[in-house]
Image (cartoon, rainbow, N blue to C red):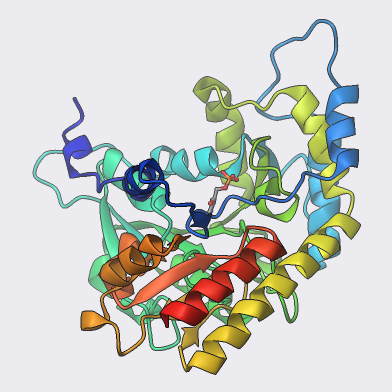
Length: 387
Ligand SMILES: Cc1ncc(COP(=O)(O)O)c(C=O)c1O
C-alpha cells in the first residue's frame, strides 16, 4: 500500500456523520448547517435539458467533452471576466471540479526519488481537504501557508528555499471555510512568484458566483495578459446552479497544461456523460437562475448576520460563498470550536468546528447557510437561546 495513506487526516464529514447518527438515534432533530451541499432545486430548465439529451443508446463520452460545452464555458468566461479564452486551447470540462483538483498533482510532480527533498505543494493553512490529500498521496510535501491577519495566505512565506522545490500553489477564493475574497492584485502577486520560481498557481473558484456585494475577481483576469502561463482555474456548476448531483465543472488556463491534460485525462476515466454535458451547456448559458440563487442566500445570510451582531459575536472574512466564519464567543469554555460545536449540536444545530480545517480554525465555526429560509429562522432561534 501507499505509505502516505496512513498519514491522511480523518475525513471531516465522516466524523460529523457519526456524531449526527448517534444524536438522531436519540431522537434529536438536526438542522444541518455543517456541509456545504446546496439544498435548493436544480432549475427546471437544466433538468429538462438533461432529460431531453438522454438517448436510447449511448457511447463513451470523451474527456475533451462536447465542443458545445467548451464553447459555452469560453463564452461564460468572457462575459464574467472580460477576457478571451479559446475553447480548443484553454478549456476542458471536468467531472465535477473535485476530481480535477485531485488529479492535477500527478501532472506536475515528479515521483519520489530516494534521498532527495520532496517536492512541495503550498496550501492555505485552512483549506478544503482535497489539495493536501492529493499532494500527500502523490508523495509531495504539503506546506501550509500561514494566513495573515486578513485571512489571506501569506505569499511572503514563499521563500527562495521553498520556491526552489515548490511545484504548485493552491488558492481558493471565495474561500472555504472563511468566505474570504482576494483582490485582483493578490492573484498578480502570486503569478509573479510563479514566474520567479517556476511553479503553477491553481485557483479553485467553486464559489465565484456566490457573492453579496460585487463579483469577486478571478485568476483568469490576472493571467490573461500573460497568455494564462502557469495559471489554472477550476470552476463548477455545483454551487452556482445547485448541481452537486450532476458532477460538472471545468478546467481553464495554461495552454501547455491543457494540452497535457488532453493526453492524460482520457486515461483517468474522468469523462462526463453527454446528457450531463448538455445540461451543463444550458446552465452556463443562463445567469437568471444564478441571480435568483444569490438572492436566496443573501436573505438567509442577513438573518444570521443580524443575530450575531445583536449578540456581539464576531463574524470575520465571510465576504462570499454560503459560509459564515464565526468566532467562538469569549464566554464559551476555552473558546474551543469543537466544544462549542458539540454544544450547538446538542441543541439540534449542526455547524463545523473550524479546527476541522486546521489548527488556525480552533476558535471559529463554519456555518453553511444552505437550508431554506424557514429552517434558517429555526437555527437563528436556537442561537438566540444558546448564545
Ligand atoms: C472549495 C471547494 N472546491 C471544490 C469543491 C468541489 O466541488 P465539485 O462539486 O465541483 O466537485 C467544493 C465542494 O464543497 C469546495 O468546497
